[in-house]
Amino acid sequence: MSYYDIDAILTDAEKIPCTFQIDVPDLGYLDNQPGHTLKSGSRVALPIWLAEMLAIANTGTVDMDDPSQSSKSFITFDLPPALGNDVVQALKADPRSVPLRDQSAHFYALATHMMELSEEPELSAVLRKTFVSRAAEIALHARKVGGGGSSYHGRDGGGAGGKGKGKATKDDNASNLGVGGAGEDFLRGLDEWERKLFRSAHDGTKASKEWMENVKKR
Amino acid sequence: MALPLPPGLTQNEVAFLAEMEMVTVVPRQRLDSIDLLGGKTPQLRPPHRAQLPLWLALLLKKQRRANIVPPAWMHPASLAEIIHRETKEDPEAFSPPPPPPSRALYSQPGTARRLNPSYLDDFTQPQQDSQQDPNSILSPPFLPSNVAESPAGYLPYHWLEVAEALLTHAGDDMPAPAGEVRSLLRDLVEVRAAKMRSSTSALEGFGDAYLTLRGVGAMELAENRSFLAGLVDGVRKIGASAEATRREEEEEARRGGDYGGDGDEDSDEDMGL
Image 1 (cartoon, each protein chain N blue to C red):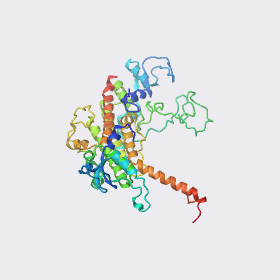
Image 2 (tube, rainbow over the protein chains, first blue to last red; image 1 turned 90 degrees about the vertical axis):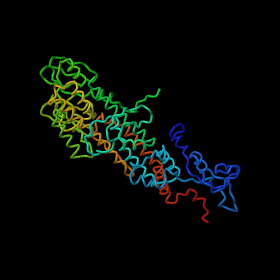
Image 3 (cartoon, chains in turn orange, cyan; image 1 turned 180 degrees about the horizontal axis):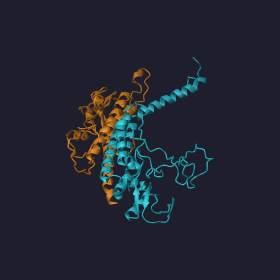
Image 4 (tube, chains in turn brown, cyan; image 1 turned 120 degrees about the vertical axis):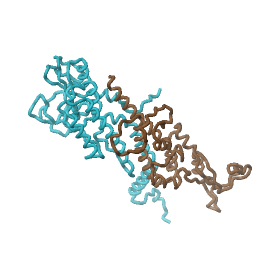
């Protein structure tokens, strides 16, 4: 992700659990013991940009007598709780009912970054399937919210109950109010990538609608 | 200043380009041929039909100097058949585009050849229309898919734009009440939009996956372009690191094979101890 990209910066600010492998003097305040040394083995939540650097760097010393002491990395990290096992299981069961935003506003970006740092083949497959199935749902809601016409197809009878043609507010949240209950919950649970998708789908539908109205005026 | 529009054409631009399509016109007054950049328009001698670009046809219609003959695929029976095919016969793929024109050219009746031959065709036959380069494969809006003689039961590329334009400005020339045709068109729009949404599920599987968009119309593309591009891009990003790892492994395997399985460039200096 690029250096200046706001989403990348915000993603990197998310915290992940890290375990220190060495003793660090004077950093005790991170573990609620100000003034003391931070002991090896203590777990602290650090932002990704820091954790990444510390995990890759190492002490660089070579200890002939005790090889296990040479070139240790400063910390090791785990996946954040947003990508924990229960979330993954919930996504495998029903991707559309998990409110990703509650886990992290930058869920996919976070996951992608973590996958760059460590191999996670299962996560990759689950996320791909999740993303695609939620995207279909997003397109559906975008069409409805955009004042979509009569639903000819019978595929989804439920979903957004009243096709409340709430005004499409131009704020950058893009989750239009006025959609029926279940739809609103779903739209509230979208993460940033999905919000962008929703906005582009919604804009497309809206422009088409406008064009159809304006054909007469030509 | 950054342009706020997404990349690609907007709906108005697509409609503008669609006006280059040729339609059949029944003139009511004589008109000499006009020299346009693309060629000369035919002379209009009522009551003979002629083919004109849509924009010119609409202009003449507004001036009441011509009537437009709607293409055969716009007939309610044809539209109903297309809807049936979309919903019942083939709910997965879009209905196919019209076959390439291989009708007889009006200038030489009795012969039937493709109007836009590919480079594989035989060129020893004499060129019928001097304007057409044998090596060009025509694409919309230069395919004659909206003239009266176009095959029914197929939706050409600019179907929605041309249909809306004709309904709005030449509604009285339709074979059926404009309201009926319009409601059939709306149904068709909804059906195909639903299909477009569900076609994205093809991307769920691992490995290479693709969406087939054969038969999709221009307006539908304009509407869904940024969404589909965003979707495919997201899938790419999610799989990016796995892809990179796979590529590295492939590289390793290939390089290992080149060196006879060893891959160790220092084998000459190795003392073998």
